[in-house]
Length: 207
Image (cartoon, rainbow, N blue to C red; front, side, top):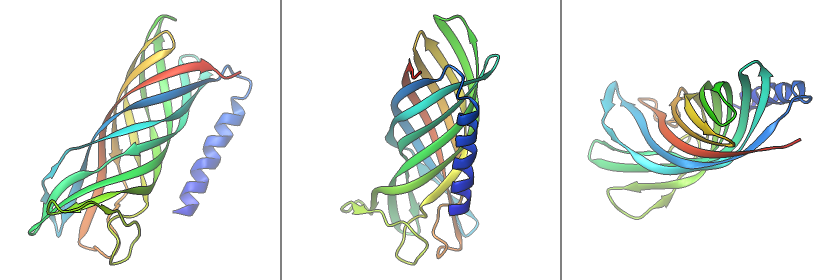
């Protein structure tokens, strides 16, 4: 996990350094997640219900060539889902620090723009809660041991579209988790994040 994280961050820093002479814009973003999890227990697909959360953080918009820009960021993102295994109702609400690295294609005028974007993300879980059978909320345990609920590390791809008006953009995106976040002790269970998000970003020139 640490190797993947370091490699990803090095690539992001190289791309940012290579664009150091470009007109870089900074952005502050906030929005809402409608998240779910794909849960496969012993070969059986478990029906999971949606959960809501928020996302917020900062991004950079770095011109690359023509209509293309590179948009890395650091976001706080609340994800999760509610599902049932055997006789237990489970609600997971993990919170992640997420680092997206998005390629963006933008067309339109200075006043009104449309954007299409896609790219990978990595994320590290650091907080959140778990509720069993409607009881009290307990702190979510991260790791791969018998007492742990999910793993820290998540990774996947984001893609979507945005509508820009001057320096504001409304984005609609889908995040598809590719990493199994179930603890390794749950060898017969696979859990992956899925998130539909909407966010508003305000950009300003950073140099």
